[in-house]
Image (cartoon, rainbow, N blue to C red):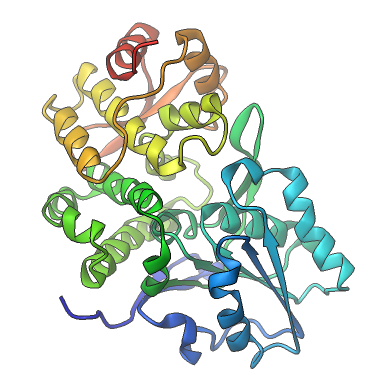
Length: 366
């Protein structure tokens, strides 16, 4: 396949609208940065893995637009997505005397994007920020839609804000340095969009999963584009997750329990979501909402994507406690994103006995 042309996907949110740019070589293109908010200062927030690879290249582009370009490399990993690390961003902004027009650039994966975005939402009650995602997972999911958050020892992403970026720059060339495990984690969030919204896209993913794992740029461009289009549609209908947007959390109730229960960073977010999708599909089938054939279909696709499909062993009571600390829970009742006929999703509770059966079926033995 040939190198794809640059794609623009709009996020329609009135005065908070912005574009997602998808293509190759975007980091070095002046058009990527044209029209962004003007300011004297810019802060690139990255991490110790990504900064040595790409921060200087981004800084060179931003030096044309900003009088001063600051850089901050946070410690890498989900285990550092916490209040203490967030404070490092504030320390940098305040220590450098940055004003309320300063533009924050998030250069990294989902953790960097969440942390930089949350810091931008809070610093002087809000400064502009731009997402420059460097992982597949961030390009297709976490950089889009304005969710920003940090973790708490008792629950993932429980402290945060809705705060939209000024732009999202998805440079597919940045995926060339992505470790295989991280690439697979990103594929989980791509797979997610099929069962909840687009059966044709699910078919396409199954056909092209090997090309995606081989980092074929045209295949990646289509996958990122379609994922962003679906998320853009959902976010434009329900920006603050009052209803419809919750369907984007398919697999996440089980997945977040795995992440929190194992310790942040032991399982990558996408790995936990992949396993969680198989479990959520099984729960959907047990409730009679979808044909049971979806369960082995998703399990096989996730395995082909390089994702784990068996959950770690945890006591049932621990599972249930962790899933009750979930943003979809209401009055202590666990609510799951379930497939309500292939290509549609809903959010509803399920009997504890059925949930226990799903956990037992898809968990490794103790």
